[in-house]
Length: 132
Ligand code: SF4
Ligand code: SF4
View (cartoon, protein in one colour):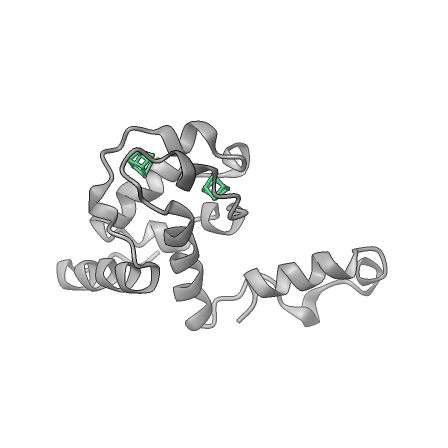
């Protein structure tokens, strides 16, 4: 993982703010988002932790599995006492990755036998979220 300089960290925060339209600095680390997150058991960092990494411009936020596990269920967004749309911030982190060509789902790498079993809608949803 790349260790970002202070300037690069600030640029990362600004980019996330620009794409998401959210102000991560409003987060007071209460943990309400983590408590209700539907994907929490599969995440390496809970939403509250991702929020803190975003505030600090920590590249771990970009590289962690949690942002891909997030299903955009919006529970965190609905419950945040500071009115932060956390799902949008998660989406911004995915968008930055995808724009840099870091895809999670690559069509050529999907086993043929899986293609015949997985519902088409699931594939379509997967490509919309996980491919550039
Ligand atoms: S619920 Fe909102 S204020 Fe609380 S930790 Fe999550 S993002 Fe921060
Ligand atoms: S939108 Fe993502 S981070 Fe928020 S509760 Fe749902 S799965 Fe968790």
